[in-house]
Image (cartoon, rainbow, N blue to C red; front, side, top):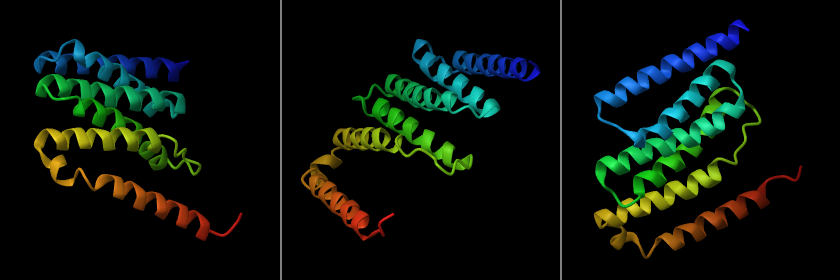
Length: 156
């Protein structure tokens, strides 16, 4: 019971600090998703329950992306980048915590969302026009590498 009360206390403190920072930086409703995500990450930090890490990573990344989207008046790239990096964060934190069987599934949506977000950001800066014709070739090369690597591994 003491541990549960401590977790609830820490979550309330984290929310209070985040709301104060939000007030000082004039971040309004767009910060709600990030605050909820950070509360989940705080709960994960104290319980090591993977069930808190997944929504914490996704919602924190998405929320930070929404905040940047609002501040920069961008074309959606910050939201995609934030969400993609949120998924990747799940994998990274899981690995850093020593989960030997760290699930690699977050890398799939994280990689796709981050890549699309980077292309949107590059398109806005004009960089995509320069490299836009070559990204399909990069996908083919990565695919061939993954297939070749899989076949060269010894059978289990």
